[in-house]
Image (cartoon, rainbow, N blue to C red; front, side):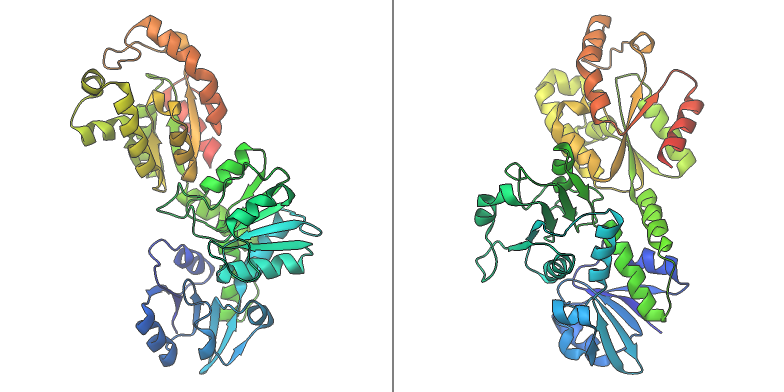
Length: 411
């Protein structure tokens, strides 16, 4: 028996983890170029496979049967080999529908814009149609019949209730990209982004900042995998498994990022957390020094703070894309909004709050090397730390107690 996922680029797929959590079998990631794809399908050397970009439509000529959802969507993401007879399904439909229903998103009589024109876009179209949307606009970068261009979408932006992003914009490693700006979407209530890596895309962050509900694609990914496994093994799972596996993946992938004032204890706490949680620890200030081959005081003296902040943005962006790690940030990381967006890709941000009277001046820190500077920084930054933190952790007891409080807050 052979189970797995076929597609062109699979290096960052979570499917193996999900399927092997459901059943005690080996699930392979099988990257295929076009020639290899056709050979693979002709050989039928599998029991059950999932299919991803760019082969969701290309597999259809090889199938003997397809289910109703796959037929109307004209895309297949799950194939079962019944003694040489291949049947295709579209569990993306079930996965997206599950996510919409779980979050109680009201689609009936709503105007929906679907960004993208590929296989997942077709899936989203039929889910929204079947759930009663009054108007569904599919948006494409190129002019296509029955599709809007992005320019045309912006003209009716104030009428749109729901956006579904099915494009790869915002997907790792191009986390900072978005297909649209939400500024003109004044009636928008919900953003659904099928991208699952990072956990929180730039589009989702923009929505949340505007008070708009935003849902990422990891739940859909888990749900469609659970439905696919049911077809593979001719079984029915308790659907609580979807939520259980989703939460497990979030815990495994999410980083813990520490922000706060200089001398608040971030670096020491990060090391202790890394040791007790078994996670890699990345200290942004240390990484900047390694990259520049200079100490932070030397950088400030030779090139100034603006140069330091540019390097800080680059380093923060790079390490925020990692998963299951601890990130200790410099006190001024909050001065650049792009740092905070980068940290939110995959991190829970913790504000390590140590009262001013317990902080210390430090000649090694150019912006807080005397009491007056330290007090000024505290007054300037405190509200921003509070604003951007997901969790507020006081550091007024022992470090061991602080670490235990953090573990309790994030697990």
